[in-house]
Image (cartoon, rainbow, N blue to C red):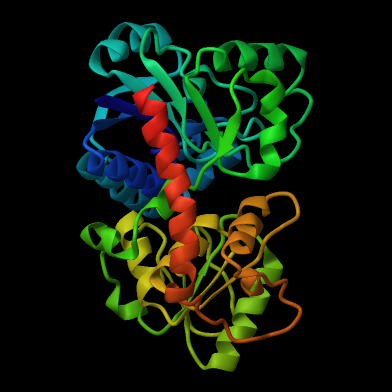
Length: 363
């Protein structure tokens, strides 16, 4: 079957790129011909090298032009080489997408990542709900809503009615977090199932083909923040001092850990995997840094906020690894999850998610 994936593949975010590759790889392994629909919505504007919406933004884009260009080139190379992208589409191209894409694929899958996080997309965005799909089969595989509530301007009566209309055309729907499913279930005519993030559908060895080692970061404490958190930075600095190691991190702006540190901003998804795999331990508030620490058996600790930590807390609870959740109040050495112990639990979760995919694409 020919399948097109619609997701946040081009967010210049490690997890976004890697989950897109993982879903593509999983579907190819099941005998399908797969591409990623290269749709870039308004949210992509934040990654443009020169920002002109304000004088301050313009000056900042000039100051960070070199590192941002390296980041762009790293991600665009990964997209071109690993994600089999279609022609590029942007805002206002839905008519062209509707005319071209249903002829190229038999099924369209939206997900994973936060394409259904309405506070992130500032309301529902048609292509992320496959509004252009025509007669192609429509499946939602584990899109993340991320939150258990949305701002009223993003999820009011008009938005609910539009989402209900789009969901009425889906053959099968799943989301990533069980706690968020009740938001959309009243709008959806089919039961919403819970499926794993695509990165968890693969074994650690499956990532060997795209991992780029970072030898100079070996033995360091890798700190990766998806959301700013001064408490995490302070804690990581104290932890690195206690462990007697330096810090490696990825951040647009320099962070002060109080110990020697190196910033790898500008690297791509392959180097990110190399950093997680080769470091001595990980401290993070990122879902995907948590995932790859689990898969690679890297010692780690996860800061999960009340608003945006549902997916990390749920995953660690299901795998019986909640001891990795920390708040920074007590400095303690990170430990690795037992790969052998989590393997059967993870395999059970994978089986259900893969069965959902097979069923959704066979009906």
